Image 1 (cartoon, rainbow, N blue to C red):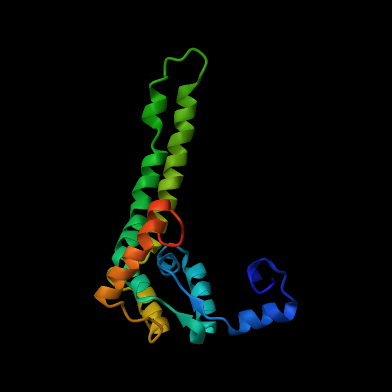
Image 2 (cartoon, rainbow, N blue to C red):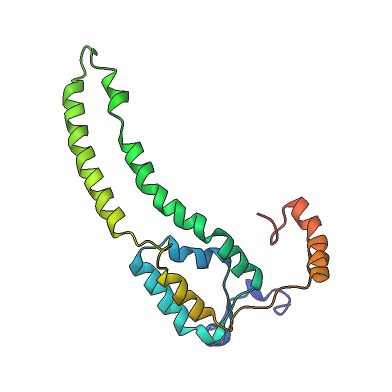
Length: 181
């Protein structure tokens, strides 16, 4: 019975060591896209970890295709954050309409907000200036391509892909993973 339900059975330290020491690592799209969402330090750490298991990495062709399809959008989302945060912080108009409130000192609140906005805008501007422009020079992409060189599977032939899609339709309609989002 243990062989039928391996995932539910406790492993010995030796078994765990053996699994981690011999397994292959299959990356999926979001792992690759995380390089554009992580801080430089965290991205570097992830890349260093992947370098240590480089010989055991494998990436399905479709994952790389999804990565390139979504990469620019992820980068754009990171750029949009600066303007969106600045917009969120700008609440003066919403508070100013209460200037005639009988007990709330709106002027004091507005004064605090103005000072806070200045500090926040300074932090945002510093972060924006430090943000690397990956459109012009994408060192992360170069490092990823170097890491994944020879690690990407071939695409399915059109007929085989059609068969797989058809076979997955019942799971998709019933929302049974994997195969639906």
